[in-house]
Image (tube, rainbow, N blue to C red; front, side, top):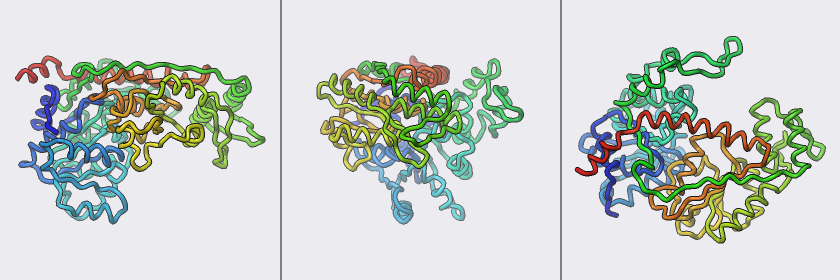
Length: 455
């Protein structure tokens, strides 16, 4: 296929070429993958092997698919470093321009080169935000080899899903600490003050006055940011909040657990030992089933499935993508809808794109990054919500992206008066507001991009 880049893609491509340390905070659906590969193809004369680190699904599907799709990229060879240890080792030995690996294998990869030179001149981190924790093993592993990397490209549409504290680790991998300091402690002390605490234990941190602007100024030479609505004319996406009422019996069980942290189901005690576990249990109850201490599932009601029935009926035969939160939700969805296909099944993604699947079931963690699902449908339903803003926003963009021709309808199922409403209104919505301030502060000047388009 002939590649005809948008003006903003040429701008981003040029940014990568002229910046050995480049952060692209591009909204989902703006074509980060092909833009990055195009820049890499123009840099091959100057760089040796390239490593792409991506979530599992994009590593298996999206990056290889893009390399095979565009005419100007067909000269690039690649090897997917996944599977068993022997398969990964064999993939590394192949003569390929680009090695593609999932982020779960980063520690293993770095350990492969403990006693020999790191072979990758250029590293691309797809979904840079998955390296936001400075304590995570994958971050520490990549940090060890960072001095041996000549070029690095970080891609994400959600750089600060939980606040500006996330930015330190991500930016350290880009520039080795030049912008935000060499340690998370120094970054925290300079820009934050302790928030809620219990003695020496600090639960959260608050930005110092003026710190937001200072951080954004530090990042401007390192990163560019673009929002979909500034550059693409996509069909609308509307979110429809669909609430339903639990039965008196189910609400009584819900309130009892909320009050006592205990719920007795079929004579078996389920103990929510802390606030996080309690909230998970509450979410499960509103969903219709709950895990007992022995791992068994106790089904409580089908009200949420009944609510989904109504949405599917309203879809009038249109394909529907359903996001679930718990394994028992997946099992109950399959039981209710035998024709449903889980996204991890062999050939599911290709069949969805071909319009062969009426009901596709996906956990946002397995379908939230990099997958192009827009050709298969335009209706999504959150059967079970995630508390992760990153996963939520990424999942929404699986259908609402370039190539979509219809208005996208995003249904959010919520049981009235339950933790569902807290997740949506108190957790996801405020986080989205904080995220928007980061994106806005780093947005590339639209006029600059328009000038690039005209030239």
